[in-house]
Structure formats: C-alpha cells, structure tokens
Length: 328
Image 1 (cartoon, rainbow, N blue to C red):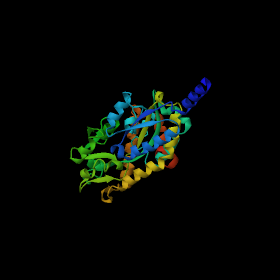
Image 2: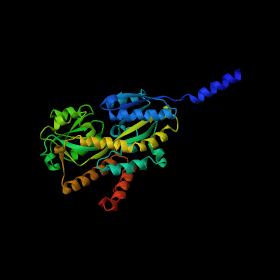
Image 3: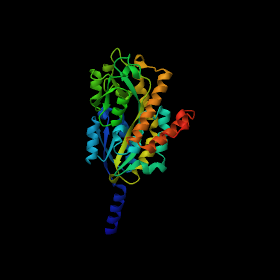
Image 4: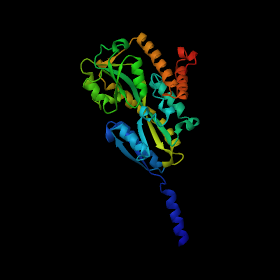
C-alpha cells in the first residue's frame, strides 16, 4: 500500500507543472488587442510544454516595465525600444534606418534566433524569448507641406523620454524634441502641441492619430525603423529550456505578425501617404547611417548588433556604398 501511494505521488509530481509564471503584456487595446491575442496563443502552446502561463494586460507600457523590474511579473511583452534596457544587443534591433524593410527584418530575426546566438539572448537575470514585428515607424506630420528635412527645421517632434537616441537624432536634424511617453505622444500630436511624430501604423486607430493628421496631414512612406516587440523573462522563474522553445515558436509566428502590421498600414487612408523623391530617400539613408554610427560610439546601440544588421543589408543589396567600408 505504501509503495503504491509513493508511486502514485511520483506520477502526479511528474505530470504536474513545476513552474507557473505571470506574463505581463503591453497592448494599447488591453486584453482586446492583437499583442494580447498573440500572447494568449503562446500561453496555450506553453501549456502543452507543461508550463502554465497566466497573462495580465497593461495599457501603460511604463507601468508594465516597472512591475517587471520590481518582480511583480515573471515575464513581459513590450516594445523593443523599451526592452533595450534589459538586453542592449537585441534592443538595438530597432535602430534608426538599420532595417529598411520587412524582408530585412525577417532575415535579421532568423539570424538572432539561431541556437548559436543563445548566449546573446541573456543579459544578467533577463532572457529574451522572442521578438515580433510591429511594423515600420513612419513620420507623420500635421501639415503635408513639411515634406523635407529643410522644411521640418525648427518644428516640434514628440520623442520618447526613455529612448535618448530619439532626442539626439531630432536635434541633429534641426528639430525641437518634445519629451513624451507612449500615453502622451498621440494627444500632443492630436492637439497640436507637436508638429511631427514617428509611429507604426498599428498606432493609427488605437491612438486616434487621424485627429492630428486632420485634412492637411501626411504620412511619409519611408520607415525610420522596423519596430518590434520583445518578450523577456526572468531566467530563474522559468525552466532552463523555456527560452529556446519560446524563440523557436516565435519564428513560426512571423507571418502572422507581419500580416497584422501590413493590415494596419492598409487602415491609413491612401490620401495621407506621401511618397518621397529618390534623392531625398538617399539623403535620409546617409543621415540615418551617420546617426547610427554616432549612437553606437556613444554606447546607445550595441556594436555587435550593428555589424549583424549591416551584414543583413549587404546580403540583400551588395551594391550599397556601405558594403565597401568598415564604419559599422
């Protein structure tokens, strides 16, 4: 009888989950948004690995991040710009002009998710378990006459207070940076406190950016960055192989995430989109590269990630001028 009881207890212990984590998800639409929807599917997959995941939605990214740092969350899903503080290598993926298209981003994500890159996914007590596309961040202006860097000079642009690279870039371009956060940049644009913002299309409806664009605004069809979302955990709160499993799973979700991003771009009316001349695009590519080099030298961006992203760009376009020098 005692042997049978011990055997039963052992079987129960083997079948019962040894871990259970609280995963905090930032989504402007809360539990009804696309990021939370993806997280719900991930939780179902984790359950198949015998790892229960409880989700908590946040509409304020700063609060989610602070709760994570305070140990109130075992994992978080936030923008990579915000997540850079937990892993500079992966956080530098969202660097100015470094990832021109979705195709470049896909190649980069496949590279960093290679099992050989696993050590770079960990920084201290934190581990990156996935990165997902959020779409290109586009310049949006209240007045479509602001159609060049020269005409933007002196105008006010909202910059995220936690990402110092944005203010530096704005000042380099002759703009007046106005410190903002995820919750305030849209109201400032919509009520005219700033003239310019940079945001992905997924922000258009939730943040009512059509109010700021009004009848005279425009959206440059030229992404400054390919925005991504970063999934991060506290290593000691999860099984040792959880990160590797999660990263492999995240690669299977690239098509879905890209589709959401592209569908969001389709929600922006065609009359808002503004095409830039080839000459202006070439000028901006050079300016953004100069900014990347400067921000890498001052420690904002990770040099190893900058070299990886340059390899991706040169793999897809080996004729680019940058492919013949060693500045990055």
